[in-house]
Length: 229
Image 1 (spheres, rainbow, N blue to C red):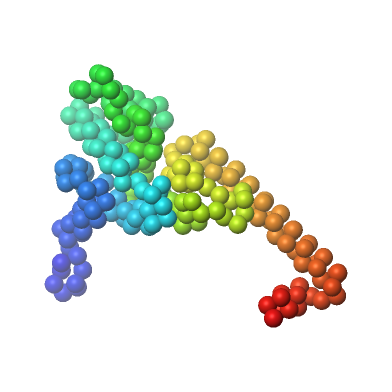
Image 2 (tube, one colour):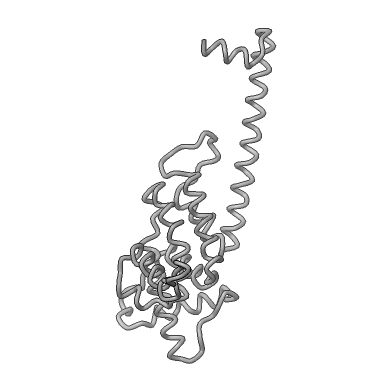
């Protein structure tokens, strides 16, 4: 910490970032093998992941993030060894799929599949880590995830029948939509459907109020007051 300003210096910021991410992933070896840029970006995103967890176990990304971080470290180590470097945010879908082939050729993978190949959420997180490596870029993705988790708590029905989403759907419509065109279009369609149904429900409520007023000669407000009394 800088003595005069009271602000953290560079070393202090690195320590805080590693503490935040370390508490989430709970794996010292995984954390120590992760590049600082990734840790720094994740440190800004972790609070949103924790917020999302409060709305149901289905929103917990801990294990999926561990798998994604481990896979990213493997890819970066191999890229460094080859001298080619890792693809960045402009990576194309076919390039990402080509990277995934790496995990089919790892030692010990002859009779089993690496989890990154079978865990859809971890695979989506890996692609987000590659495509949205910047601190603000990554945080914006998980901020939206936390916002939608709050909107759709696990196991809690919404007032509007068409406005219900499971944690899996929220993940697909927020995180996976960042890197998947089909998921993005699906999310837009779902939002449009929810808006239309909400508008229709409001119209039905307004019609009911007018009908009650006409039949009684009293305003809807008067009817409500009378019911309370």
